Amino acid sequence: MDMGIAGRWALVCAASKGLGKGCAAALAREGVHLVITARGAEALQATAAELRTMAPGIEVRTVVGDITTPEGRAEALAACPQVDILVNNAGGPPPGDFRQWDRDTWIKALDANMLTPIELIKATVDAMAARGFGRIVNITSGAVKAPIDILGLSNGARTGLTGFVAGLSRQPQLAGRNVTINNLLPGAFDTDRLQTTFKGASAKTGVPVDELATKRRQTIPAQRFGQSDEFGALCAFVCSQHAGYLTGQNLLIDGGAYGGTF
Ligand code: NAD
Image (tube, rainbow, N blue to C red):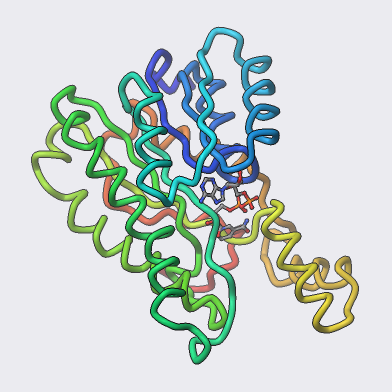
């Protein structure tokens, strides 16, 4: 299926690894020019080189910086001739007990996982509407639908973003101008973040990483972790010309892990 987005420009945040990289790769395969960001230069340049090899016809620009800061966002936006597609992503907040979190801890989580995407949407959405095409995808988490107790910072910040997007995406001046805003909710994907979580749990409990991973896999109906490429494929479809009637939605991609009917 041709996604019909070749030649468009996408800003994909936090894209040197994991789910962001999966989205960038899927868009690259569709002929979309890219601005990708991450904090570490080395991994970002390596990813850019991979993308250029995979899709020689596209332009790939890199911006090293923290997307959760005003400077990081300004540099990312300045590198993109026009943002037709925006993929919002950043690292997730740490786990913990809310009794230990002070105001600064909360503000950091809100900045990263709620206010940064909102700032980037604000900076791009009206120009998308004026051009009559725009696709915004926020990478959130399955925890928005089924909260995880130790991830209270993530549950709170991402649900705040979700509520905001539910209202904004339905504005006729956006939806009526072929600008869509949707959230993708990953379950367990085999990325560095998941491995770090297992290593942390293993250090605490003494249970080997492999054993923890196997137990977790068994809780997922698909009996495996997701791969970044399959996450990217969903992202590319949601960003495609075919998905103009899909907006304000929360799409779970979790191998069946969420057990509810709706
Ligand atoms: P990852 O650690 O594999 O990759 C994160 C990427 O983001 C890296 O490229 C890193 O350099 C970049 N990054 C992180 N913080 C950044 C910042 N402030 N500015 C710029 N770049 C930054 O993580 P992942 O597994 O791909 O997760 C992506 C998002 O999805 C996270 O918010 C995570 O919490 C969420 N999530 C992941 C899973 C999963 O199973 N992997 C499940 C639910 C939610």
